[in-house]
Image 1 (tube, rainbow, N blue to C red):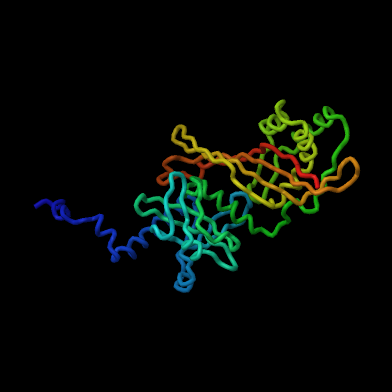
Image 2: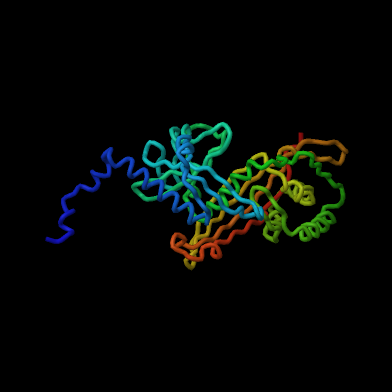
Length: 324
């Protein structure tokens, strides 16, 4: 008798759905999520102790911070699987209310990992103490990939003890000729070269951003607002934004690499503008940053993953609006 014939009549799909397998499959899902997270972030991971597990902490992740040298990211994580807690969408996944109720804490944030056991896919969501406790849908960039490493750094940086919203920054509006101002500010733009953001790291100031801000089709009022804001960009970007959103994410594939392009929208609503009448008015500074992350398509089996993962951020635009 062939060995294969012994399993010919076993209803595998039925067996996987019986209650006896729920605990086993839950453990398998936890192992899969932990393995993918370690590979994606090149991190060290430990399993929660008996006391920690009782407080719904399954994993503790520790990795180097990508833009704060000699700093570590420490993340507490909880793993869930099954349709009670999540649902795979065409792009991304839906984390259900039951998962939020299990993850949300009073004193710290939780990295929620949800595993689709049918498709063998893992997803992540970062739940803050003040996150809205409801069912939420997350986009494709919430798949666990090497890009998750930088996403986690962005989420953790929200909790840094730093000024936010542009508090204390006063932009002085100049009344000189537009062409003279543009020439002077362009020199400043080139000299600055790059800025540092606590939530995005190093951001390069390139010709792409300059051409976008001063293209012919752009309204002259917005060009003026960009000229006002550029000399203060280092001070503004050094603070945490009042609001931060990812407005667009696209993927492309080339020569064995995945490319994830994302546009970040940052708002600083506590900046003041000293206008030509020498009056201080409250404005919101808008910053858009383009981020591209490249990683191998076979990242799960790459023995040299660290040197094959690259990331670059460039400024797209900065301007102020909403004088009050």
